[in-house]
Length: 200
Image (cartoon, rainbow, N blue to C red; front, side):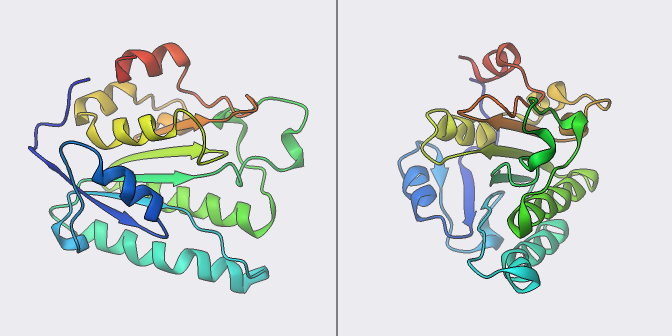
């Protein structure tokens, strides 16, 4: 796989991500800076509050709002990778059918709203010229997750642009990848396309 031509990738993990930091520290070419200001790439792991209702929603999104503002104003941070789930798309509306981004949202409680808002805010960064990759995964134990994170951090900007398709919501200026062990959320990056761009 061709890597980004920026020397070492300074990756800042945002959110409760001890497992992610442990992974990044094992990757050759990854540097985990102590502050956001020293990063050129940020990985945000969506965290759902144990609180319910509006209070839980506010708690889950407060930190991400601040992160988005920091990335927008940063000259050094050029890429955001969001690790999230299918909470915005696995409501009862699509129980009997597989899902692609053209079918829109189907929320599962406050957690689903939280996941969806994070994606909307991430997409706003793409609209502002930042590189954004969203990895949706139903479990952190998914066998493809770590490979997807590594690719999302290292893939050249040109590769991400080649995957953009304005007519597809999940590929309109950003790249969203679905890793679903149940095979319900198919996403719009087919396996052949994924294999081509990741070198598998």
